[in-house]
Image 1 (spheres, rainbow, N blue to C red):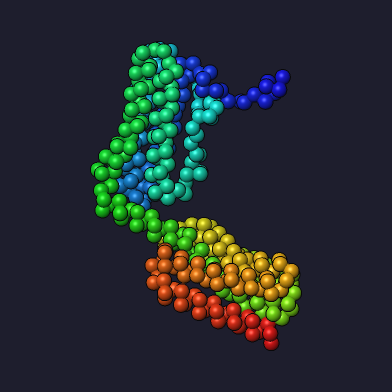
Image 2 (tube, helix red, strand yellow; image 1 turned 135 degrees about the vertical axis):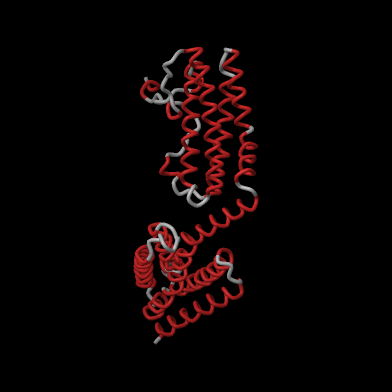
Length: 327
């Protein structure tokens, strides 16, 4: 009774007939071809060479599909059984288009490699499940083809994206990542970490009340995050500057601003004033060094210069907050 109630709505792979296995393979090749064309469309404006690679990979998938359909017609007729990946238990899945829309170039390459590897495992498993010699031969051939797609991908890449073009595309992809996420996020982290030092430590030394200090820090961090996020999103739509989606930049800037302030705010949940303050100072120093590291890693600012600017600036703001609080 319980087994009937909790039965999975999906079919197990072992329960599929040879006709259903072929139909599933046809649908899978169709889906993968569409995905590769979607990648090509996604990349065409910024990375035309890589887009051409994915167009040709889609052609390869369509060739596989046509071979499968020819065999299906010979064995089972014109009406192809409707069965998709989502109908089969444990079958590899593909992300919908809206979850792939914002993938980076490198992530798209990794997704394509994973797709080919999953398709290879499917064909190996399927070939072992069928008895018809011609069907088994085709599935085995497709397994080898999918296994060899890494070589095909490399071959197409060498043709359409030689080393100099690939480096240029990688550089452009990295630059876009920096402009859309790193730069606004770093600006937010600097603002949240540095600008909130003065009000938080001023409140701490003025009241020596950890809970009141926490409330001041929380309100300053959240308020600054909201303000910085909206400012970043509103002042540039990214069309002319090429800095990317204003929503993404605004979220990156706003979240990092709030986190920058919350880092040295959270210690004031500790009741003991000096313990909380010591921990807050340690975290603030760590935040400043993290900012210097990010500047060096992504913005190519010399580390010592970045550290000097951030640590000295942060130290001055921290000192101002303590002096004001003690005054």
